Amino acid sequence: MRAQGTRAQGTAPTRTMTRRAAIGALTGAAVVPSALAQPAVRRKVTIAYWTWADNPSHQKMLIDTVDNFNRSQGFITVALDANMKTMEVRQKVVTAFAAGAAPDVAGVVQTHVQDYFDNDILAPIDPFFQTWDQKDDYFPSILTSMHSKPEQPVLYMPNRILPYVLYYRADWFDTAGLKTPVTYDEFIAAAKAITTPDRAGYALRGVDYYAVQPIEPIWGSAGVKFADEHGTVDFDGPAAVAVTDKWLGMYTRDKSAQPTAINDGYPQLFALMEKGRAAMWLYGTHASPQLMNALGDRIQATPIPRVGARQYTLANPEGEFMTSSCKEKDAAWEFLVFLSNGPHNKWLSTDRGYLPVRKSRAADPAIEANRFFKLAMANAANWWTPPFSFKNWANYQDKIAPYWQQALRQEITAAQWNAQAAKFLRGQA
Image 1 (cartoon, rainbow, N blue to C red):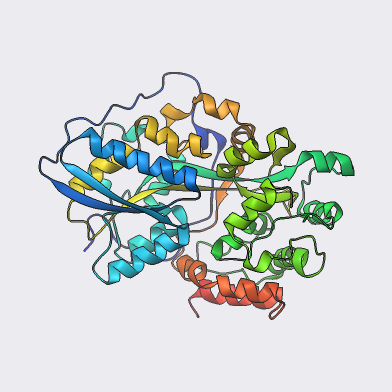
Image 2: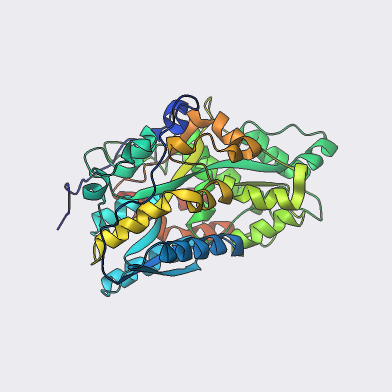
């Protein structure tokens, strides 16, 4: 049974965030969050928290954060499991929920929020959030994402937002006399031109759904809606297929992607960039701290290439949600509040390469000091997400990965790949 609201069907329009809505007013009086005050839980309880860690540094941040929470009071103990990848968290949560063994709190990306709610795995935090004295500190666009759909209650607590940029090796571009690409065709041409026997022009991912997520804003810039507000799916149309064909062609025709792309995931792509084996990579700003440490000023970034007149920047909120099976929701809420405040919130946002979701954190000096943050902020008017709240989005996201590898192996064409993806979005497969 729903704690608040009703289950909505259909889809919400694709959202474009304005600069003001995304980053808020950077001047004037900021809302200063209060510390966790007057905890409600006054008995010994243990809650389980499952999330992912991108690398050892991120994992240490999570361990330290949970340790700090456990030491901050004497009643709630959080048991952390952060030994998973992003998609593994989702798979484990769904499987555990079906078996009656789900965690109390789990990490979540906006892509999964609606599906968790539709399948009764997520417990809306609206009853807690609406009486919280810090609720007005969130940017309007983030509040919108917290509902997922306008008519729904507040579903989860985002703690950061991840804009994507195109990283490139500025030194190699300068030596080759190449301009940074603005259009998609310029990007494809640059990848081919800068490829050498020792390096790939582009670090291309072949593993899991996140292999295709970086392409979503390029499809969007080509006018592809994926699924519109009426539920009409256009992902098998000529505009979508043309984008897909050129991306696959970096591996199959141009040989501008690394030979191992089919089996490469996040760790392999990171290693390619750090070790100077790839010239470009389209990824989130959370890659920036490690890339700057490894490459210094040689690594720069530019906005995501576009097909049409307007550029789109994928900007995905992330955070934590409370499961419907959680028996200690007061304790879970206290933990969510803790994650949204203090130095640990900075660790998990700007220190990790994300941008903040709260007005009071918009003036963090780390934003001005990071050129990748500044680029993302300058393009905040183009921050965008595909229709994650569409009823069949999770069906597409959960099933598409093997077909992507088939397309890279040339077992199916770009048109066939898009046709299969469209079937998933229509709920026909």
